[in-house]
Amino acid sequence: MSHAVFVFAKFHSLLYAGCMNRNNQIEKDVDAGPVVEMFFEDIEVGRVRKAGPITVTADEIISFARRYDPLPMHVSDEGGQATVHNSLIASGILTSALKQRMIMSIERNTAIIGAAKIEDQNFLKPVRDGDELSMRQECLSKRISKSRSDRGLVTWEFALTNQQGDCVFSSRDIVMVRRRPS
Image (cartoon, rainbow, N blue to C red; front, side, top):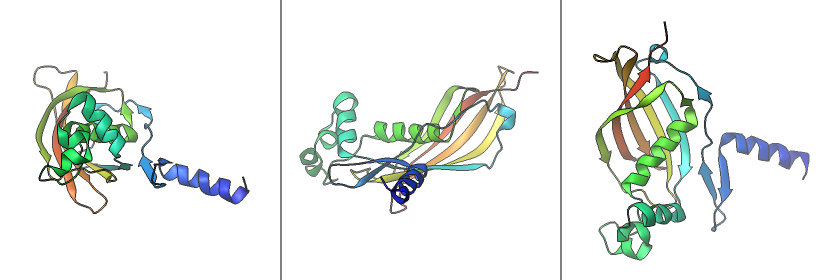
């Protein structure tokens, strides 16, 4: 491998992890982010973070759907063509999982206790084979728990957009985060 090709390949891999699909197109993916310990006090209201893109593939849509959501529109192109969608589309559960995957590409925060609630979850447009999804995350608010003083509740707003900039999914998640030990 020539030095120029190696440098380009290395630079390209820094932009995103990817591999070639069966149509010789690059499938974009995200790597797991660093493990951090970001306490409730460290999280800033108004902070915006972005991740992606990640390519959604027919193989991923079908494999996921066969196991978790085997509606005809999720398990074959023919099944999708028989619906108003006119093609294979991803399960909403897969779309939610891809959101989580992109969150984890930013960082894996060990101070997170878990999700308390997912509010206002909206599946706005179908996610299709070949779509490249990107995520925007904004911290809307935070408050100390009324019942457990060792934690706080952080409200995040999420939006997933496709390669055309269309919002395909949105949600508001309330997450429990540990407070900094005294």
